[in-house]
Length: 194
Image (cartoon, helix red, strand yellow):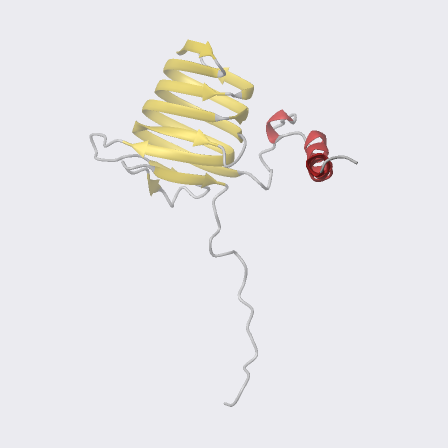
């Protein structure tokens, strides 16, 4: 007859297999977001649109969970860092590649960049930025005062509702959160004594 510790170890091993195996098999069958093929669809209901503009500042585009995604179009002067960017990347001739390695690419100069796909982060610092991001993720914006004491503006879909970048760091989430809902109020019947 086996020792009670051996039986306990066997029980623990079998229990672990029974509990963990289904989760492991499910994870093997469902590829992670970053490993699925990507095709950009601007009408994706999980996407939002963010417009950014500043004379002097920086930003960092990040994922909410695994990887951020979408299409980022930008014109600027300064430094651009792409971290684990996968997809179609178009860089104009005015930007020269300063570094590539360890999943990172760094560009410097004045020009345009279009990144369409998934990425761990896009970080920028410089001047004269005009950018548009259609996708899913989080933008952290850091403005600096220019000669007109402006830190830059960002807006979602309505250019008549610009918001200031601020110098302390502002966070913009894509798609834009709807905190109060968008439904129509439903009148209720009056109850009780008049």
